[in-house]
Image (tube, rainbow, N blue to C red; front, side, top):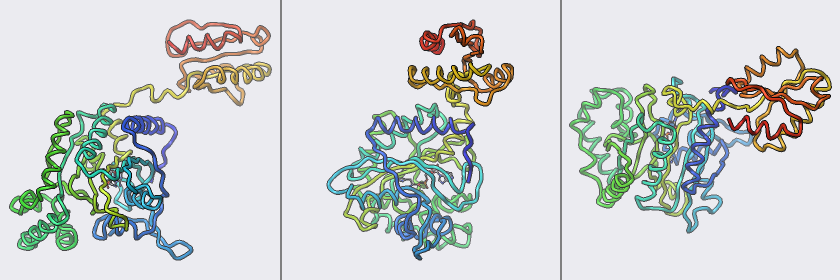
Length: 417
Ligand code: HAM
């Protein structure tokens, strides 16, 4: 679990603003859920035999004896909230959320125990257009961030639950025959979650799978058509993808479409965004049949990728426009007032006052360190003449002197470049 320190937070804010802007473009509305939910919600929603529920949840009993869990993901809680507040009655919803998730995983680069997701969930739309919308939205975001060339979209369909059940039987029957050669994890999954064996990281298991039954032979006609429609919409939008029949995702609620954006610039934890359709989840959690689809992106991983590829615009780190140097007692008094006036007259102005005194020299050093492009300078002598000095710190423009009344327009001009 990491602290996000002030030097790092501008990048977080940059990324969050970028994601938000794209979600706004598509008409998604924000929902905020609690970070804890009843444990049963995740067992039923995410699935008893997933890694998340079997070994990664932070579960505790509260003082009333109820079992609660720090959310390991956002979809189950979002569905719970939408059901509880009647958001799913005869209406469609496009929702998004952002916040911390918790999984007791072995930490490594790109994998943390508290991490952050920005997720989107849609309800009430059964056709492939919404699957395509979710994907083009993420493609647009990745493109805006300058990451398009460094990520690949993996796409698959898991078909209907009936098709999956049939395939599951065939796969288990085949794998039972070679069970002694499977890796340890896959052996365990053989009778609990055999489809997960498909994306096993073991080379031997992957080789064994080359002769296994393929899902395509079991895919139901409706899901096939849904998938074809999705592919056609993506083709039309110019979003390229790789069809990856071994992509199954680690949560049990998916049906039909699943997708991931994967990068090979981050090592083992290369999935920066994952999602898909989950038509069965709302009824499974006690609601009416409601088609649903969504995704979540991993904020830490996207930030790592932006940093690794040096895709963060330098303006992101410019958190100040000006630093105000005040030399002397009356300068402090008058400068304090002038700073307030400037903040009122120039909306959005980021002006930091030198508080706590100090020599002119030491204040200049602080101004320099602050990163601000301009220093405002006021000494006691200048107060008497109501004269302010504005000194560019990052280029060779001359400093200017102006009366207090002209300070607003002078500052505006200098900030404009
Ligand atoms: P997920 O694939 O488990 O899906 O997580 C989504 C993303 O969160 C991953 O692709 C990854 O970028 C990030 N992530 C997951 N675990 C960690 C971790 N331990 N440390 C850092 N980043 C991590 C879900 O959670 C689904 N709820 C997505 C979804 C929404 N499907 C439909 N709607």
